[in-house]
Amino acid sequence: MNESKKKINEGRIKSMQDKIIALAQLASFLAMWVFVIGITIWIINLISVSVELHDAPGVSLGISLIAIPVFITLASILTYAYFGFKKKDNSKLKNSSED
Amino acid sequence: MPKKIQYDYETDAVLYRPIYETGKGFYITVGILLLIILWALFMYITQVWFGLGVTGMNQPITWGFYIVNFVFFIGISHAGTLISAILRLSKAEWRRPITRMAEVITAIVLAIGGLHPILDLGRPDRVLNLFTAGRLQSPLLWDVTSITAYFTASTIYLYLPMIPDIARLRDKGGKLTWLYNFLSWGWQDTEHQKKVLNRAINILMIMVIPIAISVHTVISYIFSMTLQPGWHSTIFGPYFVVGAIFSGIAALLILMIASRKVFHLENYLKKIHFQYLGTLLLIMSLLWFYFTFSEYLTGIFGSEPHEMHIILYKFTGPYAIFFWGMILCNFIIPVILLGFKRFKTITGILFASIAVVIGMWLERLNIVVPSLANPRIELPIGIYFPSIVEWALFMGGIAVFILGYVLFSKFFPIISIWETEEGRKEAITEVEERIQSYLPGDETISK
Image 1 (cartoon, helix red, strand yellow):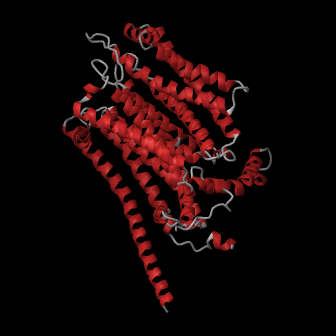
Image 2: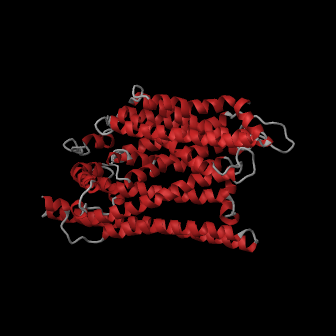
Image 3: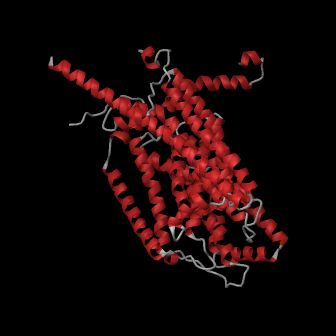
């Protein structure tokens, strides 16, 4: 009886740990997007300053046209991998099929 | 008593050993490195407290070791992601034991190099002005943007191919299971996950190459966008990229030889790997010499007085020893050691690589200091001697790099285990099929 209770408790702890780790993974993944959005806002702010000061805004725009898409693409690749790994695979696990 | 983790039965047990077994050498190395880092930190606090007067920088030489090291470290970073991406893209099968090490170098060295311009600021708090009053028209801001992009891309490019190995460490259990569980992103080695991973790596490796090239091109723009003699050159972009790849390969070779010795990786990092990378180093040495020769020949042929003054200053002035040292280390030594079969042993390649790393650092010094020492305005010719503070921070930077690598190897395999296994299982058939497809014959049969 005690052993079964112990097993149930261990199971609960394990599922709690899994939930915390899943949350931490989601938080770290979201942090990547916060970082990319932050950089985008920063670049847009610098463009607006250069427009305001008539300080070669064309050059700023040119640089931003390259920089912003690069960061967004990088974050998108990470997003693709994150959700791709989480997606349930209907095909058998490779390891179990080998067993 | 903690449960002993079983890994000895694994084919690649030697790759797990540094993670699960910690010898005295590890603690001694970490201790020494921490002492150097603490010394550098103390010196940096001294600099912040007393100002840049404690450095050897002066008027007119306002850039010294920090900018030299900035360019040098960012150059070294080209060892990793760029080389790894090129090898993956060209499906070079011998890449498998090398790519992880190369990618780690990039991530650590970029972080160190990227901080150097902040060291160069007497008031480091003023770096925050970048957020509110930065000028995106300035090549310095292009640097900030491109280095940040390269660092982000390199970190992702290092991390994603590590996930299957992290999942293996998670499944083995142990103290850090929670960390490996967190980092493994639910990897279960399914076919779908493999497909997603390979697709993500394929997109990244194509993206990373232009980003890496742009980084060192943009770094060269800090110099070439000015009208300063010795700096204002259209060749600087590709010249810097070639130099960066050159020094990067040399740094990678040094690290490979050290890792092979320390972690007993003789069965993974074989002579053939060093031979191939050694040949690549030789080609880069010749290419570097070609660029250097072109750069100076056009200057000498044009004979513009200010330009000639700098060139002669480099050839015969107080820094001439560094200029000729650079030629010796970057061209003469590597060509002799790598060009003749007799010298192209692992020891020979190690000596050539050390010479190249020193030579490329001297090259950065030769670019930064002599041009500043000879201003065109009415100022006396300057002379620059780095102070103990600058030496300490240089040593500190190297110590942070070695410590970063040592700690990485303590927590993660420095050779990709899953890629090694994949190589064993699939590469031979794949290469055979690929060769079949190259050979003359019916297209459908080849497919």
